[in-house]
Length: 475
Ligand SMILES: [Ca+2]
Image 1 (cartoon, rainbow, N blue to C red):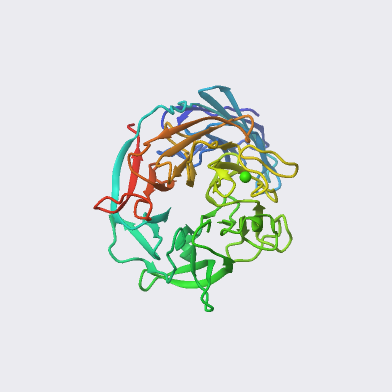
Image 2: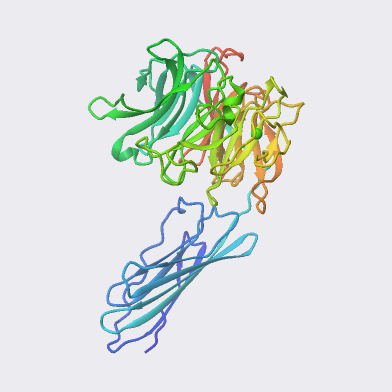
């Protein structure tokens, strides 16, 4: 027994979905309504995906979905469907620079001896990125004091740290006057309240993670990573748990970036706190990128058993970003400012357990057992790089953006799609226009948000304070 499903149009009318099914059956079942309606909005995922789904009574339907933002390397995947008698395979191919094809195949053997195979293929035009596209820049919020990190809650709120210890919230486009929480920090030099990340399950558990510098009971500076919690009764933050305490601190080189990786682990960057050799010492957390479970325990697959150290040999890393399709981690790092020459700010491809060289090597120097940066700013240019993010949508998608303090620039780095340790180009945007730039992040609305840092003692603060800039592109 053989039958064909009708051709359907789906995916915003752009993708053509050809659905065919064949099979044998002792009692052929009528072909009911096949796939549910295609989603009216593009999938959020930047990767290509194919989904095969079953209808009851041993009929097979398959739907292929292609994200319009798909770029880069496409891979084939396969999986076994939840019940033993079902198998599904998905193949993703790219037929041209601007076209991608997803084929999903599903075979079902059901209880009544029916075997059905469905094949679905969807083709979608993929508009190529246009790095030359010029964004509209909106001053989204003003009146901030040295903001350091920005993060987006699933309920639409935007959380921003201010280095003096305040966690501010933008709700419905307005910066709320009253902080979500004020922490007792020690704002001195580059230290104070720094990074912030929301738990991936924030909607359920309301956990917020921050890193800050304060004074220990003995009076010395220390860095700590803590978990906060939003009290549902008040909508305000309260201390929940100290995850790592008493990490050496200084008035400078305190790292401070806090982010969740796509692996669900919590990452925290730590600078050398002015003690250069400590970056090579695996007994201290200075000069490291640390990786934790969200509850503060050590992940079993960390490179050093029982240690949160994920990579070492860092001077002062302050930006983390994961390439969406490959999950590769890139980090920005401040190069020397006199103690070992000048400049040579870095972007590194971070891999588990690797040594990034500080203070033994700088810039492009190489040494066995150490990893040199994918790009560095040379001895004649200073970026002072901090926040970083990959762009997943719009004409800049695929680029790694990072902000510069001293450079007063938004840097747009194009990585080599073949060799992840090489780059294809670096563009410098808005040089000097908005002053010192601290953090950059892509919002859930696809806009790019940037924090200025002109009130940090090293810039020229406008009368309306530090700002959140919002970058969008004309449709
Ligand atoms: Ca290095």
